[in-house]
Length: 241
Length: 241
DNA sequence: CGAAAGTTTGAGTTGCTTCAACCGCGGTGG
DNA sequence: CCACCGCGGTTGAAGCAACTCAAACTTTCG
Image (cartoon, rainbow over all chains, first blue to last red; front, side):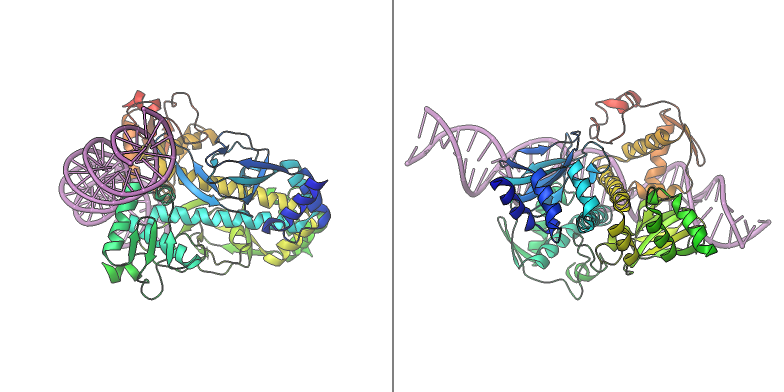
C-alpha cells in the first residue's frame, strides 16, 4: 500500500502522466515496477524483447545504437521522459541499447497496462503521441545534421542549441559521447572545438565551454533543435571564415 | 451525402482506420478534405504550419529534408499510410517537404478532428502510435545506415531489403532519389551498383536490377552486421572481394 | 525529333577517419 | 607518498572513401 501510494505520488508529478485521471494513474502505479540501475549498467540491449516501456524518475539514460567498432549515441533521456515505447507498439526486439549514465530510478510498465491506460484515458494517449513525435523530430534533426552538415557546423549547432536551453557557460562531460551523438570521431570533435576556439567563437577550458560571440543575425539552423529556422553555410559561417 | 458516404467507404478500407468505430469514422469522414495533387506538386514545405495530417489514398508521396545543395530523401509514403502527423502533435512548423511522386489522392484531417477521434476511439490512438513507432524505427535504421555503413553496404542492404519485401527482379525508378535516401550522391550510388554488378552479386540493366547471389547467412533485418567497417575481413564481402 | 533530365564514367580533391603518440588527471596499491 | 595504470582528451601525420567537377551517354517526354 505504502509503495503504491508513493508510486502514485511519484508518477503524478511526471509530465507523461500529467492530467491523467486518478483511476487510470492508480492502476498504472499499481502495475508499475521500480527498477534501480547503477551508473554504467545496461538497462536493455539490442535484440532484447520489449515487453513494456520505461520512465526515468531520477538519473539519466543513454540511448545508442551498438556497433563493434563504435557505438552511435542517439539521445540522452532525463527525468519525466519515457523510452523504449517505440518498439513496444511494434512487437519488435530493441534496435538500441539503453544504459544508465548515472545511478537511476526507473519505472517500468508492462505493455498490457499501457494499452489499458490508452483505452481508458485519451490524455495519456496524447502524451505518448507527443513524446513519440518529439523523439521523431529529434531523429529527423539528427539525420539532417549527419547528412547535410560539416563537422564544424554540427558542433556549432550543438553548442548553440545548448546555449538556447541554458546559459553561456556550458559543461560537457564525456566529449566522446557528444562526438558520437554528432556522428563524429572524438578526434574530429576535438579539432572542431579547437578551430572554433581559435576563431574566437568560443573558449574551451577542459570540459567548460563558453560562447563568446553569437552567430550573426539569425543563427545557423540549430541542428539539434526542432522547429528552428533555416540556413547552414551562410550566417555565422560567412562571417567567421 | 454522397461524398461523405464515399469517403466513409474509402477510409474504412485503410489500415489506419481499421477497427475504428463507425461513429468516429463517420465523423472523420465528414471532417475530411479530399486533396488531389499532380505529379511533382509540393504538398507542403518546410516551415509551413501543420494544422492536421494527410493520408495517402492513391499515389505515392516523397518526404524529404530540403537543402540548398541537395535534398535528403527520408521516405516514400504509399496508400493507407499517414504523414505529417509527427509535427502536428507538437505545434511545430514542418521540418520536411512533402511532394507528390505521382498523381495523388489524399485525405486531409484537421488536428481538432484527429484529437476528437483519439478521445473517442482508443483503436485509432493505437493505429497512430503504431504508425509513428514504425516511422521512428525506419529513421533509427537510416541513422544507423548513414553512420555506420559504407556505400556498398548501404546499397547491398537496400537491395536485400527490397528483395525481402518483393521478388528477385526489382525496378528502381529514379536512382537519384534512392541515392539520396541512402545518403549518397548519384555518382557514388551508380559506382556501387557497378561494383556489385561486376562482382556478380547483381545484374543491372537500366532501372531493372536482379539479385543473382544471396548474401551468406541471409540475415539483413537490421543492417548492423559484423564486418561493417573492415569489409575485407568477414561476411558477404569477404566472399566477393 | 529535340530538349531536358537522369545516369554513367573519369579524374582530381577533400574532409573525415585512422593510427599513433602524448598529456593530464583520478584512482589504486605498493 | 609516489609510481603506476587507465581513461578521456588532444595533437600530428597519413590514408582513403566519398564528394565534386566535368563530360559523354541514355532515357524520358513534350
